[in-house]
Image 1 (cartoon, rainbow, N blue to C red):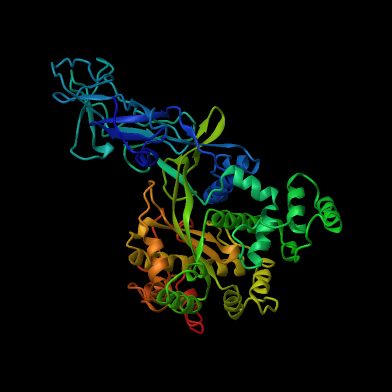
Image 2 (image 1 turned 45 degrees about the vertical axis):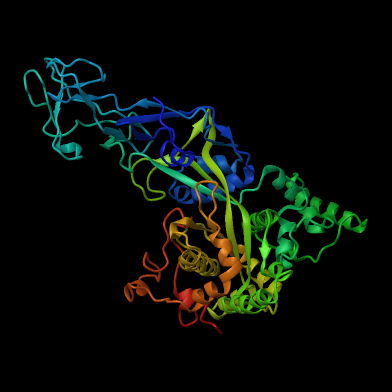
Length: 567
């Protein structure tokens, strides 16, 4: 059988182990045939997967995937081979005679009643351990046969099994108990297409660097060099341009396996000999290892994004006619100041990789059921697609963020410029992971501010860009007070709605962002219940990678809200 499906349909509906309705029958995917490797930087892939599986690591149900990723296991990332496709098998192999209800294991088996037509049973068993199969059928001890009477519903317990020859009832109702071979209780049973039978788990790897680009960035100074670039205002399009710096060289040497002190000594020797610049010392701040690694990771991601091509408002001023120059220099900059933004930039070649790396059976809540990673020949595998789309980078004004958090009661050292504000926050912050229940107060408040701002942006931007809300997605960079909103296309076609907003109506959009309706239709219940719900800030799962946590309208529009302060 050959059935045509698009690559995105296969990625979201035909993963190994998943069942599907094709040509009027039920099939189970055995494997993708000769999938094509996707070259992605392994460090970026591992970091994205660790972010995605945080809820399962917390509950201890990640099946060792977190341990493997921390041990730097290689993740083979592949895409569909459109010429070879997907191999499927009929499943389950249980066929009901449409005339008498007798069940057989072959579709073409002739029924004793003379019936020639059989329909496939749609019930399957599943267990949290990952096991799935065809249900065990009760059989008549005398005639070794079984038939079923359908109740007209999809409820398995209402099925009635009987012997087609002696008409003896075989069960009081439904299938008999289905023990699981793992020894941990029995299997559950339902129709094959139910989400609890197979729920794929995806990671969205936003702005994944090409391995060669990633190697270049790391060899040129890595995260330390990129952090210096951010702290100095991101003026250059390439953070690796110019001479190597002390911080960049130290980081490169440290990644090669040298101790921190040895790396410092060698880097200082290079500076003393004039072979590297001393830099301004901003990237050599004392950060905890976990904070430093995340700050470096986000800095490298930002550097990779702008290396792919960016357009700033200042770039559009040059060469434009006087009316447009007035718009960009006047209304655009005024609107950004009112929205407390340091800048808005267009990224017109923004890569997004969607990776299916595991699945669960049973409870759909993240971390509730055991995670079952895809493995091939003993190694980890992720099935994915890589597309390039348009995006807008929003950078919050660091001094405004610093002042907002200080007014909220957080103890921070004095800072009177953007760089000082960034340093004051980086030295003290601990950004929580998506499933964390007891976040650091400063990190939790900062993440809530950035995340709420991003969701507000998606919900207001969709109408301006002419894109469905679920067609936009977020990528947070909280350590650097930034986020990216990108068009979450599932193909190579990009509508251009974000570019149109950026070039013609950014000022109107930002005015609506600040002054548009900020109340919730479900207030006062929403306000008293956390300040975020589906009617005001929540987004669909494909758009939000943080499970709609760390959101609160009060951070933006409360009495001391970020967008209410000195607007």
